[in-house]
Image (cartoon, rainbow, N blue to C red; front, side, top):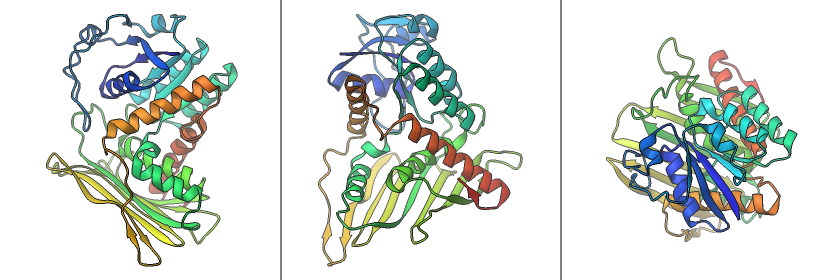
Length: 350
């Protein structure tokens, strides 16, 4: 049994907590928050852009802490689940490693490459596992494509176009602050950057154009990027960010091209309602069109799969390469290079 302590009881902290309740071989033994109301089990003020709203939780039998260092001193805890704001990820992770704990940290791993590398170094120094919550590969459409690529079901990959956007997230404090959250590049497009890295490996360079959030800002509002690989026949691009019209709260899509098929997927939340604009659809060279069966479509199932992957890795003593600290460091680096390309108006080597 893996014993977990969660620090940070915002939306993602709640999503992780609910996922642990359904997972096998794990239990939450401690939570940490500065909010005494949440420590008392009143989570009704928690709200996000998917999944359930917060409610009253029965935290009987769970140790509750206002101070993180006190939770780290709990010898029962095997792994710390960090759901704090991104600016706090580095210090919280390093402290957990020094306390001898495994770490599962929400994405983005950190706000800078220097921070992310120091987190990975700290995990290696004490021989503890380090996983980062890049949940995208556990969503059924992305999981299906990743599997098809790895088993070469339709031959080699020859390219792809990825898109991700949200309406202006006014409910997230300091969203465009580079020292707090980092804006859509680190909050949104890091998902697809990580997935592209899993799917195709690290590119040789990136070439990005975009729009900053205000004339004096160094935080992008919207970005379009070409990923350049050693295999120049691979044509891969990523676009997205924040749109200023609230009617389309969220959107994600891809068109991924294999030698013998093209996989298309398009999902959006429009006027508050989720819409499968194009369910995952496979267009094959022989004119066959298929729509794979993918399960319930409940995003909570993806988070359960992610949590189960982390728990299994800790129990087996073998880090999951899908959400390893190494892959998260690479994803953060790719986002940083995209920003550098935007600012310089040049292609930047990775």
